[in-house]
Length: 292
Image 1 (cartoon, rainbow, N blue to C red):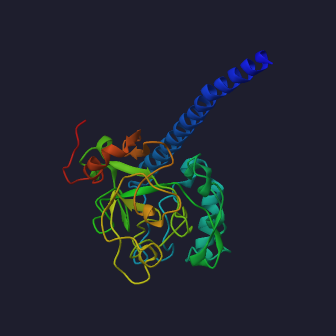
Image 2: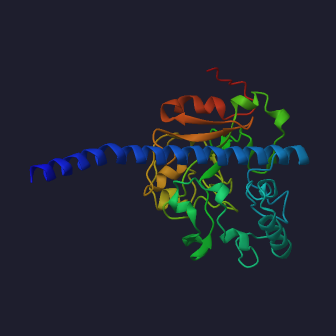
Image 3: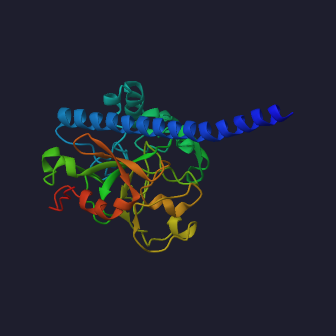
């Protein structure tokens, strides 16, 4: 009997040692995979820029691109991620109907692109029902383009209605943010990879986000009507999956911080304690260069 109790005690101790180690290894592997996916996105953006002469607009402007309304920056880089078929499907759909919310013909809208989903982000791992589209299925993403400090100051590299050249990033590509992590909103209305309106039509909180975003004080803004989010800055900080207001800032499901893609193609894990330097890294040509 004593021997059995000793054996059980040893098993309990071993489980107490190994389970946290297994969990840590899983989290580390997920963080590494997430970083590799962001590197692939960075490579796709660079090859797109090399071919076209500019980066894609963070969100297309209907006044300058009426045939492809509200297209996310994630759509035109699909061929550079070896996703030629979804890209061709999107182009056929836009030729039929220039509004991306109509499915059919916009079948890619309802697809999940694995390259755009953090492995820890279960919410983005499959299409979700979007209440604002009468419950239609939409593909979600864990990654948003860095548009600058907030939607009113689009000084970043992936911005609404403007295609930026790498040569315009005079603050240095290694010192300028490009893409960051943020899980989709709990109501599935923010975080679509294919398209999105965002705050005041800017794409803010959909496919783009500022590093110190603000709430647009406009009628019917769900961050106000549903989330009752205060009118304040929303810096890089930990978040919760059930909190709509946390969709207004970059955060991740990794412990302690989140991954960011820089414009030189490198990916760095930024701790939440570094939130105060992100505004320096969010602009492309403001002269606010951060030295580590």
